[in-house]
Image 1 (cartoon, one colour):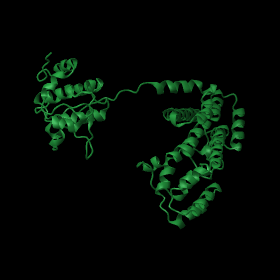
Image 2 (cartoon, rainbow, N blue to C red):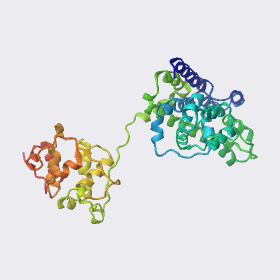
Image 3 (cartoon, rainbow, N blue to C red):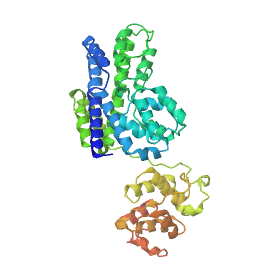
Image 4 (cartoon, rainbow, N blue to C red):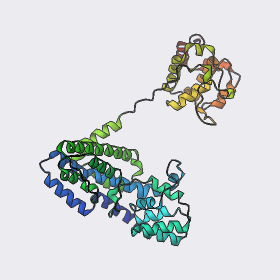
Length: 427
C-alpha cells in the first residue's frame, strides 16, 4: 500500500470514528428521540435517562466497538485467529450481519483470510458494502471456501446496532432483545409511553398487542437504566484496561464523551471502584488433603514429605504456603501455591500432562531458603528434584546441605515457629 493510500485509509477511519460519536443513530431515530424527550419533559427520570443514552452511552459504546473492530482486530489479526475459544463456524448470513458494521477497508481485511481469488474477495466486499446478503451467501457457497478463520474474526467483533446506518429488518442486538422481552412481558395500560422509550433502539420493533400500566412502566424504566449503567461500567473497564491500545487521536475523540456533566458522577463512581485493589484470592486445600486417596502415583514429580508435616495438619500447611507467597518467595497466586503444595507433598496433582517449574525468589537471588525447606520438610534431601521443580536462583552443590544454615535468620526462625518438631532454629 502506497503512503497516499495509507493516509487516505487513516482519514476514512478517523472520519468514521468521529461520525459514530457525533451521530450514533439514524436521523429518523434522533428526531423521534427528541420528540419523545419533549413529550415527557415533566418526567425528570425519563428525560435524564434518555439524555444519558443519547449523549454518553450510545456514542461511547459505538466508539469502543468501532476502534476495536476496525483497528485493533485487524492489527492483531494473527492473535485473534490463534485463540481457541472463538467460534469456528457461522452461517454466511451471520458473518454478513457482522461485516455490515465494519468499514469497507476492514471488510476487505477480514475477507483476506479466505482462500479465494482476489476477484471473489472484491465481489464479496462489494456485496457487503451494497447490502447484498444473498449475493454474499451465494459467493461463499459457490467458492466452497473454508470460512473458519473468517468466523473467528467475526465472533471477536463487538456487535452494536448503533453503528448500522441501515439496519436490516429483524437485526436485534442484546440491547434490542432486552427491550423487546420487557415489552412482551408487561401488560395493562399505556403501551404508547413504553414504546416511545424503546423506539430509538429499534425503529422496526414489531407491534406488541399488549398494554402497560404505570407500575410496570416504572419498573421497566428502572430495570433498563440499571442495565445500561452496568453495561456502561463494563465498557469503561474495557477502555481503561486497554487504554494503551488506544492511540492519542482516538482518546482525544472518545474522552470528551466521558467529561459530559450528566455522566460525571457515574464515571467517578465507576473509576473509584475500578481503582480498588482486588480482593486477594483465598488459597485452601481440602480437609482430607493428607489422605492417601489424594496421593499421586508419579513419585518423580514430588518430594517425600516429612511425617511431622502431615501430623501438624492441613491448616498449618496452608498457612505455611500462604506465608511463603506473602513473603515473595513464590508468586502469590493460587495456581502457583497449589503446584508448590503438590511438589512438596504429592497430593492433589494439578491438571496438565507436564507441570511447569516454579520460580523461586530467594533472598539475594540465592537458593538457601529453598534448600532449608527441602532439607527439613522432606524426609530425603533430594536436591536434584529441587533443581527440576524450581528455577530462578543461583544453585549450590547438590550434596552440600550445610547451605541450609545460610538461609535468612528470620526465615529460619519463622520456619521453626511453624514446624518446631523438625525445623530447629540455630544462629
